[in-house]
Every structure is written in C-alpha cells, then in structure tokens.
Amino acid sequence: MNPKIFVSSTIIDFEDLRGAIKYYLEEYGYDVQMSEYPNFNINSEASAIEACIENLINCQYYILLIGYRRGSLYSENLSVTNLEYRAAKTLIERGHSLRILSFVRKPIWLLKNDRRGLIEHFNVKSEEYSKIISETGSTIIDDPDYIFNFLKEISEGIKFPGSDSPANNWIIDFNNFEDIITAIKNTFHIKESLREKRLKRLLKTELENNIKRLLTDSRGIEVNKYLGSYKFSQENLVEYLAKTFYPKLWDKNNNPLFLDRGIDLEKIEATRLAFIYIMVPLDRLKDLETRFLEKIINEGLFLTYNVNKDDFDLSLLSLSFDKLLEWINNFKNIFNSIFYETFRKEMARISTDGSLHHSFINISMESCGFIMGLIYGIRIYDLAKSLLSMLENDDLQPLLNFDFSENYLQKYL
Image 1 (cartoon, rainbow, N blue to C red):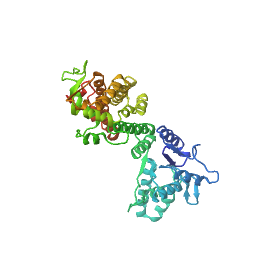
Image 2: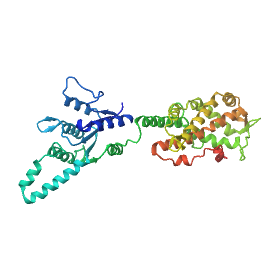
Image 3: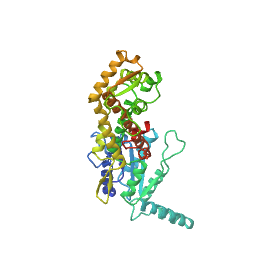
C-alpha cells in the first residue's frame, strides 16, 4: 500500500495549487487525500469533518497550507482547517507516526510582521490606536486576526512523545508551487518515485540473494564452514576455486593449459574438489535471480539523459547492470552443458573408485571447462557486491574501480 498524504487548506484560494500538488505527488506514487477528489474516502454516516478526521488517521504525512482566507467555521471560533491541524497534532502527541509540514503564503508572513510592528509603534503613543489597528480588517486577508493567531498556534509546536519540549514549529513561507515541492522533497526525502524506490529495493534483495547463493548451500550453511573444516582457506566458493584452480588452467600469457588432455590435480586438490561436489549442491548456483535486474534494464532506470541529443545515454550504472546480466546468463548456461555432465561423472568416479589414493588425478578438458565456468562466478560476486554498495550507500567508487576487462581473473595467477 502506498503512503498517504493528507493536504489541509481552504479550497477556494488554493484550488489550482492543490490540484498541482496532487498531480505531482501521485506521479511519484503517493496517495494524496483531498476532500474534493473522488479517492477521498467518505463514510455516509459521518459528517464532513468526521470524514476528514477518519482519512487523516490513515495517513502518514500531513501538509498544511495557509493562505488569505480563514475558511468555513466548524464552530463559532474554530475553522475547519484549524480543526484538522489540531487533529493532526493530537494524533502525533498520542504517538501516531504522522509527519507534518506547514506552509504560509509569503505576503501573509510579511503582512503579519508589518501589522505587529505597526501595533507596537502606536502602542507607545496610545493603547486605543493599537486596539483599532488590531481590530481593523484587511483588503488582502479576510480575517487577519484569526489567521495570525492560527500561525501563532502552529509556531508553539507539537509535544512529541518522549520529548521534553515542543518541536515541529517551523512554518515555511512560499511564493509558488516550486517552493512547496522543494520543501516537500527535502523534508519527506522524496528523491525518486515510489515505483523506482520499490524496484531498487527489490533489486537490492535480489542481489543479496544471489551473493548468498555463492556463499551458502541449500540449508543456509556457509560453504566456507565446510572448507574450513577441511583446512580450506576461508573464502567463499568461487573465491576458493579462483585462487586454487585458475593458475592451473591458464598461464601468465593468458593461454589455456587444459586443452586436449585436461590437467593433473594433486591428491589434496582433487579431494577438496570432490568434497565440494558431494557436500555443496552446485545445481543451486544456477538459480541466480535476474527478474528485477532485467526489469530495471528494460525500463532504463539508470540511463542518463543527454540534452544535446534529446535522448538517453548509457551510464556506468546501466552498463554495469547489462554486464552483470550477461555474466549471470553465461554462468547459468554452464550447468546445461556437456562440461557439467562430464564434471559430475568424473567427480563421482574419483570419489568412489580409489583414485583419491593416487598422487595425481587427471580430470578432462570438459571438467576443466566447467570449473572455469564456476570461476567466472567471482566476477558476478564482486560486481553484485559493488552494485549493492551503490544502492545502499549511493557510492559509485566501487564501480569506478571495477575491472570489466577480460583480464579480470589475471590477478589470481
């Protein structure tokens, strides 16, 4: 359910502005509650003000707009807008997690200060003059004394639970729609649409799950617990494979060493490889998730707009997501290949026919190909961690430092 924003103000003098605020915030995915719109829930058995309060209770945000009009009265000395503000204040003081933001048109703020200065000036000369000025109406504001007292009430703040002194007594003056939206975005931390935020959250979870798949078995036991119990180095599976077997598969000139005849493994290396095959459900590694990765790529969420071309360009982020999807698809394909079938057969053989008692055990080129495919999982692991850091900390540095070249694995030689 999307968060709800209750907008409280008189309607006549804010009609256009209310419509603009509603349209803008709903484009970001928020449910904006205004009494003049059809999505405002109305209980047929409740009065208009009771319906407003019922809607307010279900909201997470409250925006108050004060303009030139007092608005209709709920009682002899209390306007409907003022009553809504008091209801919001009461909810907060009772522990409701309602965030509040108050606005006043800038000319009213200036007029209030001028009027106060004028009263103080004439108060020195005559208390009677000050009383006359105070009671005199305004050609701009329909009930200046009421509106100024309302502003005073807001400035006295709200007593938040657990706080010794009132807070939230800041009133933001505004001239136009942009002033309001800027304040709302900064105060409520609206940097992106809720859809974008939701997609990023789901992508973050997807990346976390993929990283865990490279670290744990189907029961959630960390692979390095297995490796550690057999005196393996304390890395995750793909790191262990990269450090142990990549130097046996490639030389420093990037030439393959396993073509034609495969490679010979020392007894301890073959034992550990067979142990991984038996104890770690490798099939689980092919279930890396890409649903939200594909969705974000297809929607171009991280493309950069180029004003000179009037079109979108690839960014470092979008390129990173493209590359991650490519690597994951290649990684998953290795499990549907002859390499995997051969590897399974050879691991089963050397685990049961006594080969592990030999000083050296030969594994075929196809098995080497599958091990090489697994080793490429280290690129997925490292890139996924870099992207996760970006999503969590808004930090591009890990991506700027990432080696996307084909020589990525040379560091293990």
